[in-house]
Every structure is written in structure tokens, then in C-alpha cells.
Amino acid sequence: MRLLDPKPFKVDIAKEELELLKKKLQLVRLPTGNVESNWGEDNGITVGFIQETIKYWLEEYDWEFEQRKLNGFLQFKTKIELEEWGIFDIHFIHELSEAEDGIPLIYLHGWPGNFTEVTKILEPLRSAGYHVVAPSLPGFGFSSYTTKQGFKNWHAAELLHRLMTGLGYEQYVVAGGDWGAMIASSMVRLHTENIRAVHLTNVSLSVLTKWSIDLRCCQVFVKPPEDSNKLEYSDFEERSLEMMGWFQKGQAGYGQIQSTKPRTLGFAMHDSPVGMLAWMADKLRMWSDGYPWTKDEMITWTLLHYLPGPTTAFQMYFENLSLAASGEVPPGTERFVKVPTGVSAFAKEVFMVPRSWAEKDFNIVEWQQHPRGGHFPGYEQPQELSSDMISFFKTHRKPSMV
Image (tube, rainbow, N blue to C red; front, side):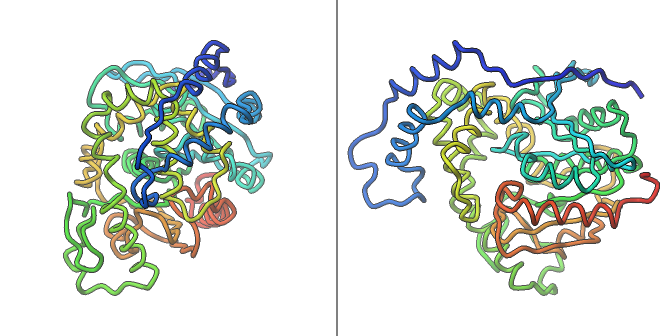
């Protein structure tokens, strides 16, 4: 094992970049005419919302204050080499528990999220005895990306495994949602002997297929198991299937764009902070369960994509969406995940399969259901998510961890 030499990192955006950002906001060109009409947000984010948020952004939003908050977390950057993919600069939070037998935990975010998804659950996890590592995924935020095409989720998984072992954690646990859940699933398939348990807030399955029909809820992204007509679903699971149908019918177009023309979309978002805000706010508002996103939160999440540049995060879809649809797993690995797997199922999660489906691919030993919460549980329901993770890992991790 080669130990890494991480360097302390602080978010520090150049003054010139912030001045240019302000000019772009001041010179924004918004649509006019009948675009508001009688349509609600199902037709996209509204002009009124954007006007109001730009005004706040220019007159009240304080990036320097937000930057100081971000820099209140211990952050680092380190270089990791991954064979033909080159050398990556990986950015991550790394905060230790005071417990002598602390449990190393890597927490993985998704899109349109960022490394700050861990911040509301960080202190509960540390207090419960976890050494927490929360990286920016390759190509997201302050982590670099490869110049070569073909970088799959399992390559990211190998890179982040090397981060953990390079920090001295030969045995650890992993948790994640969205793309983070998919990468976590690849990590545990690739390194079963190192990862003692995995916790997910949505599940990637080998039974997935493109645009299959589930007669229970409508057109969805999931093909039920062959024996699905013999399975019984709870009311919660029925609603989860309906949520997936709702998502695929009216919310999934972004994935088609990002999986086919990420660079083309990237030019627009890289140049327009308002365009990036609209793209982000639409997802944050529609995919959460009534969470009261503040303007500060939405602007900061937007800037964590806009300032570094959003194109490489879009690239995750170009490289992997077909794999998510087919359920392909890392070459040479077994589909069935043998290590203990815990799931936190939130009622308005846009991609949550029934437990009986998840058990086809994972050794599910704990499944917690919550009546509130959507696609961003670390922000929406931090107490519930952190409690689930703490209980699950302390009960089900293999005893050889400590």
C-alpha cells in the first residue's frame, strides 16, 4: 500500500472570477412574453423565481461568508495515479472521530450534488465514532477528471478505494446516494475484502433495462424481476414505484441531454451562471420532498458546479447512463453483493425499488423506511439518515474492522 501525502485545501475563488460573475448577473438576458402563462413548475423553473433569485444574488448573497463556512470543514487535496487514466487531484473532507476505535467511512455524493451533502450529517457521524471521508467525485467541484474517454463508474470506484487505503484505511465502510450509490456498489464488488458494509439511499440493479413497462405504475426505467407478479408490495413500495414513474415521465430529460451532448450543454452552463442556476434549481425543487431550499443554499450549490466548470460532472452521464440502464457491473466481479447492505428508503426518493427487487443483487440486512424525504436526504432528513447509518454500521460491519 502506498500512503498518500494530502495537502490542506481551502476554497479560494479569485477576485477576478467573482467580478466577472457579477457582471454576467447584471447583464442577464431573460425571456419575455407569455412564457409565464398559466404553466406551473412542471414546465420548468419560472421567470419570476429567477428574477427574484438574481436580485437576491446581487444584493444580499455573500460568497465570502459561504466560502468561510465551507472552509470550516477540514479539506484536503491529494494526487492519485490510476494506470492509463493518469494522475488525479482528488479533493475531500477528512474529519476524525475522537474514538480510539473509530470506524473509517467514505460518503459519496451524486449529481446535482456536491461534497457538502455530507455537512449536515458529519457531526453526528463523528460523534458516533466515525472517521469521515467525503470526496468530490472525479470531475466534480475541486476534483480533476481524466482527458480520456471511457472512464466508467468502476474506475471512479477504484480511484476512491485508493484514496481510502492511501489514507491508511485498509478496512472501511462506504455509503452514498445517486451516482454515489452506484460507485459505492462498484467499490464493494471490486474490494469485498476491504469494505465491511455498504449503505445506500437508492439501489442500482442488474434487472435494470431501458424504458421497460411496469404495469403497476406506468413507463419507468426499471424492469421488474421475472417473478414480480408473484411478489407483494407494501403501500410504501407502491408509492415508490409511482414516484419512479413520475420521474421518468416528466423529469428525466436532463439525463438524456447529459448522456449524449455533455460538452455542448457544458458551454452554455460554463458561460451562464443564470443558466446553471435554472438547471440546478429545477432539480433541487422538484426532486426534494418540500424541503425549503434557501436562496443561499441554491446559489452555493450552483456555484460549486459553475465556478470549477460543470462539463466533467455532466460527463458522468455520457460514460455511465447506459451502464445504469443495463445494470452492468465491474468486469470480472460478481453481481450479488455479499457484504451486509443497509438501505434508507425515503418516501419521495425518485429512484427507490422495492426491497424484494434489491435483494436480487444485494445482501440486504437492514431496510429503513421514512415517510418524509426525497432525493437529497443528507440535506432534507439529516437526523434520520445519520441515525440509520450509525445504527446499521455499528450492528452489521464485520468484527475484524477493529
